[in-house]
Length: 400
Image (cartoon, rainbow, N blue to C red; front, top):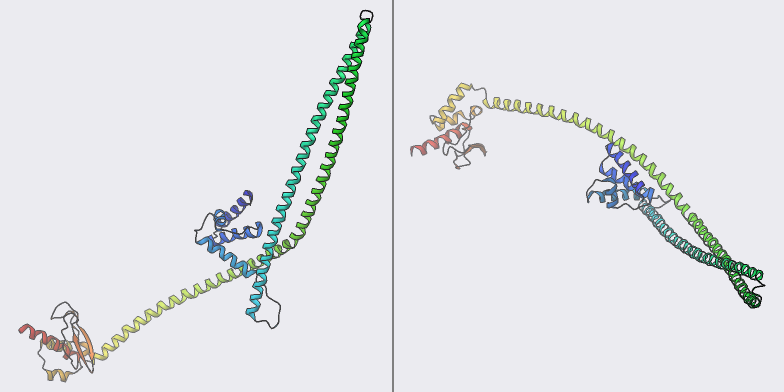
């Protein structure tokens, strides 16, 4: 992926982050852009590089959620008929998996053929460069040959001028003219032979250069036709996959719109639930307040029932007499449970002065005991009798 595309995705993620998107939404957006737009399989390092957020345990979860959504979207419902729903769903998953596998194989084949085409293109370019190098070498040899030919022409011109000068001085050099003329003619003939040989060589080099040009042209046309055929074949294979990819993108857009509608409905439902819960909490508070008031009134009613209409001052005198041990067992039996509603238990055990006495119902009576020193009053028919026995036992221990 190019740096420009990577920067574009980062800008989109920054815009989503400014709009309040969470880490999971940022990771899902990066996965969608990588997979659908650039055909890159999302990885933890790639997603982390684009989003700049998330831990090593959170990003794999987001990628797995993305694949789950892709799998759920790619499920295909198989026709109608007497097919069980479970089998129908499994068949749809199988078709989706086959489609993904076919897409992967097609992409691999395309990459392989593209690599082969690029290798052939590189080989053709290499041969073209070699042919151009040979042509340059031939051109250089031709230039050298032409330079030698020009030098020979210059030499011939010089010799001809020398010959003309010698002819002008014929009277002075009559004796040596024939010899010199013969030598010059021989040199001239030798030079002409060398020029003809060089010209023949130059003609051969020109023919060789023309042959190399023709070979290079044929090779170029051949490899260009191969590349063109390969590109046409690749386009023919890729077009169905592009159509399928467009279909998947449209399905993804539809699913995203449905997801947004569902999210909006879920938000409205949560608001309604929150309103109902707040109202329920207020009613619960009122109910607890009313319940506490009812409990207080119930206790008051129970206390009034237990007091049996006995005057509080009289009940207090009887309780003080019972605690002082001035009431006999017969008198306590006669009183019974008349003043039990006015009896108040001692806050501390008079025996150990640490424990808090506890009153318990035993059979048809009561028993007052200390949980610390395990001192007890024994079973009594009424609360007043139990209190009197509890205090009487303490006085007996004090006298002893």
